[in-house]
Image (cartoon, rainbow, N blue to C red; front, side):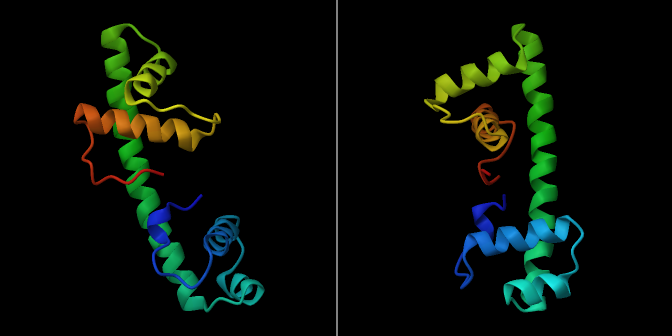
Length: 124
C-alpha cells in the first residue's frame, strides 16, 4: 500500500496510484500501465520515483525501529510480540486486524515515543 503522503491534491484516486505502483513492481512496463489506466507516463514515473524514495526511507526507519525494539525486548526479557502488545496497550491502540501495517504503526508510535525515531517519520 502506498503511504497516504503520496496522495495530496491528485486528480487520481488512491487505488489508481496503488495499482500503478504495484503493477510496476510486478514488472509491467510504464507504457503499458499508462495505456491501461489512462494516466500520463510522466505522472506514473513521478509516482514510482516518489514511492521508491519513501519506501527506502520507511524501510530504513523500520530496520532502526526493529533493532531498538529487539534491544528493549532483550533488556526487559520480553519477546517482540509482547513488546508490541505492551506498546499497543500503552498507546491505547487496538488493532482491528493483524495486518503488518497495523503492527508497524504501533512500532512506529512506540519508537517515536521512546525517542528512537523523530516524529517526522510518517506512519504507513
